[in-house]
Length: 117
Image 1: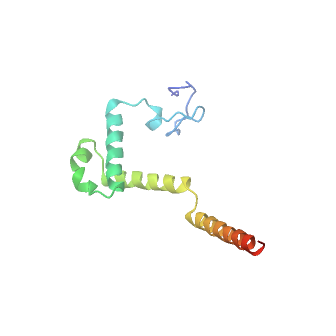
Image 2: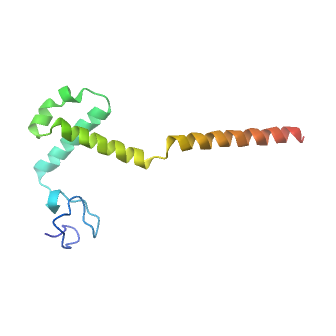
Image 3: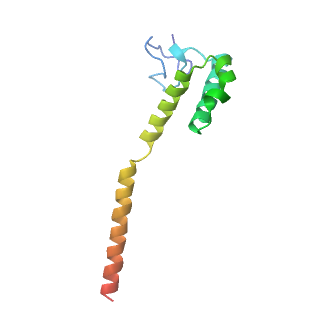
């Protein structure tokens, strides 16, 4: 099997992306079909609803049935997005420490500016 973008040979264990050109791949490198693309869009919409706090199990029941999406699929995607979001932002504690130290530095500068006038 070959990558659809760079035409390099792919190992059978490659699932998510081409190791040569980083092109996202469907399962086992197969080209996407319209049905799987619609399922992915439906899953993303359901996860968006879930992350917004909506009662997604009730609201999206028809879409889940139509595209064969189970609650475990939704929860796995929610977990993946949460991990990705947490990994991409700086640690909250570090931000607070930097803010605190900046406030102390500013207070010291103002204090010594007033003392030496």
